[in-house]
Amino acid sequence: MKKNVPPPAGSKGRASQNHATGVLQDSPAPERRRAASPTGDPKPARQDIIGPGLKRLFDQVVEEPVPPEFLALLEQIDRSQEK
Amino acid sequence: MSTISDPSPPAQRTKVEETEFRRDLLALAPFLRAFARTLSGHRDMADDLCQETLAKAWQSRASYEMGTNLKAWLFMILRNQFYSEKRRSWRTQPLLDSDAEAFNPRLDHQGAILDLTDLNRALQLLTPEQREALILVGAGGFSYQEASSICACPLGTIKSRLARARTALQQILDGTGEQRLERRTHQNDAMEEIMTELDRLTLRPPDPAR
Image (cartoon, rainbow over all chains, first blue to last red; front, top):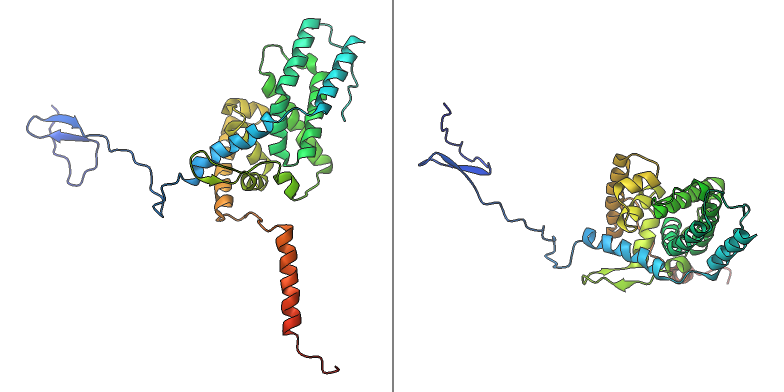
């Protein structure tokens, strides 16, 4: 038979035991918090803005009109296809 | 400009498929440009690279399996082209101001200022392998698996390159890494030269011959 052993003092386990009933109870999950910046600055951390920055860098070029040389090259492809 | 040296279409493709393939090439050209630009850091070099990729893709269209990921296939060709160019005659020029100006710095939508010119410069300080992993997954929308196929390396390698790239980029931008952004402009350099020369003239002891 399994004995109800009281948890050692200072135990940081997620489950705590109700010694009156012997039932294991889940302790509430600690609230996840974002690490505060050392300066207490509410601005997002650098790593949070690098991703969107990279995406914008990429998208800026995607949004540029395709140079006429590219279209000429593809027209050349078409012509070569017709021959 | 690139030319098409092999005009004969593969026999197994129909005319409609050929037209669709050409249309898809054109539709993906902007993404190829973006990949080439961020990979090379040079506008003109990137456009040359992109045109060569389109020409190569057309020449090799028989090897492309219809219905598979054309974007990944094109990116793979561009990447191979980039590295073979680099091996052949890579000019290790620093990023020019004119190249960096191709990206317009804007205010970040989250309220923090992230200068895209700085970001682009920092990107160029990464190794090409780290840079491509970051661009493919972080900006190009590819999965780790797709990026590993494009880069012809194991999945774990892509993940570790990506992690190192993110750390390095952050350190560069924060000025805490081994590599730092060179923020001095030519104008600053000229002004500094003038001031140094002025200091030298001011501090010079009087010429006893005069």
